[in-house]
Image 1 (cartoon, rainbow, N blue to C red):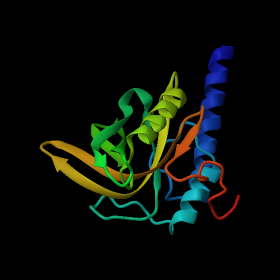
Image 2: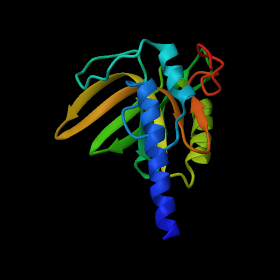
Image 3: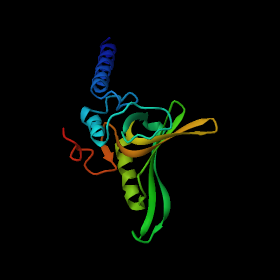
Length: 182
């Protein structure tokens, strides 16, 4: 009986948390956050661009939206590119992907990264997602593509968060230093 009460209490607490986030930031969260995000996470997105309602149409929006995926249905890869003579290194595109409801969502870095840097992102991803059930990812400038019978969304990667930790494309977004305040 105690276990049932704890489960109901936790579910009520998570629901209240989600309602509070959506009340203050009605456009910033497209899915349940499973208790991972906080107000500062959503506020950071309002500092990046003017909040706008999400549109499923193929319309770019600079406002980043958060959405969460089961870790087992998500991954981070480094798509290896060419050698850059100016950087004197192999380059790579960072791609974080997640599947939900039969739709693929790919969050792609804004520009090529050094392959070595991309692998550091992967190392952190493995640390932060290990033994976690959910990961939340923030992305902007979405587009929708139909590939055969499948729907794929492409986003510009901003950052991701689990209960263990947080990583971002831009330095300072995880600690609120690069935003409009706390």
